[in-house]
Length: 202
Image 1 (cartoon, rainbow, N blue to C red):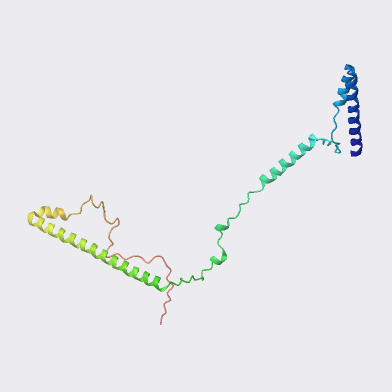
Image 2: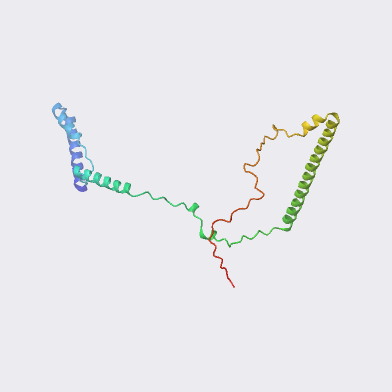
């Protein structure tokens, strides 16, 4: 096929050169219009592919596909949703064993000594804090007793009023027991029962 194309190209070029010589010698207007048509001939590469055939689309097929999809969706809607198990919430069986014992990490000598000193220092601090609180309470009680003694020497009525509880400070009220006191000579019944004690006579 390629050899045939090359032959045609050679012939066209030879014709073109011959015609151009004729035109230049005769200078005829009628031949120039014919020669221009020959000069505009162009060649292109041969295409060996065939045009693709268009597939016929059946409209009924699309309807059948839609019906199938609708049926599948209905079946999926009827099936209950399955929850995906979360592995983080499932306790492994080896962790459910209560007999396992976690061994304490072995500390170095410097670390253990530092922790012991820190524990002693913390105990010393809490002891001093407790002594300071007890001393403050003792001083407050002594100051209260001294003030009451001075108030008693000044006025007995004010002293008795100061000893009464303050209802605004402690809003507490009690009406007493809601039941009557027990009777001293009351004998509680034993309840209903059948006496099956056997009596033996001589």
